[in-house]
Length: 262
Image (cartoon, rainbow, N blue to C red):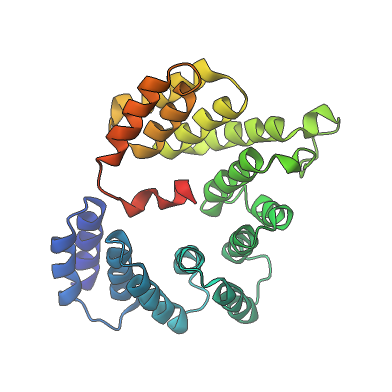
């Protein structure tokens, strides 16, 4: 049964058992959307980015409004330096989706503008879907990323309850988003990593160390938190920071972390 094989393939992929997953893909009908997506995800996890992009483009040719695939494909095209194709895919999806307020479409537009370094436009579109059950957590993560890394947006505010100049400060907004995200992503390592960086960017080094250390107590090889801890420790203990960086250098590359390093 194809449904069972697909589920099994996804389990193998989540466990980085690539050979087992490959065996599953050979048993599936290569023309089905599920089989193509599993094949693309496998190639992506193995860092075969060009090949993965070819598979995802085939999927989008079959269904241009498959926004889960579109999100991944946009990221791949950006990383491969094929940014001109990003806008083409968005236009095609927009022309076929009769709902201009479709959350997947709005999120994809936010991603497109982020890759074009148009941060105000990106923030605007992510904000439109931040309450959505599926796209909201991803959108809020990207919004926090924008606020932490592009401090020229310090006066940016898309929230009705931020009336004063002080409340429009980018870090206040970032903390508000972290509080919203915590309600739905509190058991996610990525969320804790984001919270650690909010402390770090606020100059709250001890709380940042505590958050990164909590994650590493559960997964001592979680590279995003190891890197965050190294950054936080560097001003006060450069030797410890360097030791952490040396440890990171020994780990194999894992594509699953790419979102946190975009």
